[in-house]
Length: 210
Image (cartoon, rainbow, N blue to C red; front, top):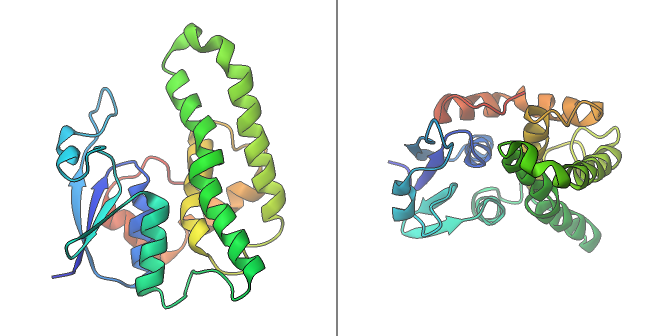
């Protein structure tokens, strides 16, 4: 039996943790949770795993690790043997950390606001111009930074790519990714990887795939 257990919520950020584990070739067990079909909220049972009641959460033996960025860093440091980690110099490490934190910080906030405001109808009207402006600002920044590279930090995926692809996938589902062909090609390139397919097979149907 594998030491790593992933508490996995369908259609959530935990899908990318399964992808990383598949890329690393690390055995793991999935404990599945399903969103409420009407509210789309996580079940209360996840609060028994972590007080916030959110996913992903992993256990490596008795050690609990939450938050996607922390999980990615932990798995790469312990099991990756520097694969998917930052380059050897300080400049490469700074770029790596910037993108890692950008994905869950700057980039996801306006997308989450767009998701919530889409359910408010006319009441959200005054917020939409600023939300759309911020989404365009962040996606444009990503498009330019990616350029002609296959991945954000070079020819192979790195830790931040496991987080950044979700940003593009959510933007695509919400209808914001169209003007950014490099980002769309980037997400499709990741979605085509054998390890990504294996992660979908383990995690179940995934609404954000490209």
